[in-house]
Amino acid sequence: MTGKMSIIVVEADRDRGMQIAEGLQQAGEFDVQVISELTHLAQEIAARQPDIVLIDIANPSRDTLEELALASGPMDRPVAMFVDRSEAGLSDAAIEAGVSAYVVDGLHPARVKPVLDAAIARFRMFQRMRVELAETKRALEERKLIDRAKGMIMKARGVEEEEAYAILRKAAMDQGKRVADVASALVTAAGLLS
Image 1 (cartoon, one colour):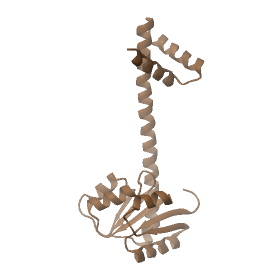
Image 2 (cartoon, rainbow, N blue to C red):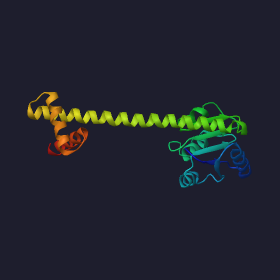
Image 3 (cartoon, helix red, strand yellow):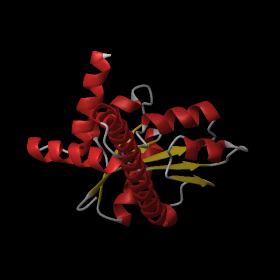
Image 4 (cartoon, rainbow, N blue to C red):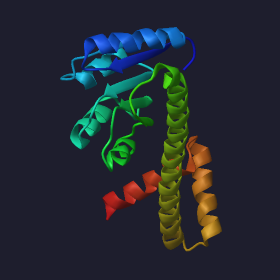
């Protein structure tokens, strides 16, 4: 998020939303847009592709909070939510819905920038964790495929595990493919033949 950061302010009261936008523009170099109509929030946010979404809501219910959070695309960008008061469990629900920052006691201009910075940092940390988790899952699935393919080669050729892997690796090098791709093709072909 380099250059001028784009922020969407979600505020049902258009005048209050404009005040928040003015406060943000005074706090830094931001391109701020206000959305006060909540009926098509997800489409509006998707069309504008902001760097961050700031939601200001007086007294959220669990359903409203989750709906706003999910519509804001918390997996795509940081979402900071400012509420005037919060009932038990609402902050947990917001975090579970993907909100990066959940601030009770309303939106105060002096703390908007630090909260946005914290929301961005937290979002980036979770993004890295999601990427690492996805890579780990992919590697585990590939390892399972390779092990199945090695077992098939061991059974078909009567060789040990090391030799079965060497056969897989050689086939991958000969075809200019990854070992996991050759293993997947072998497992798929064996499934079709059985």
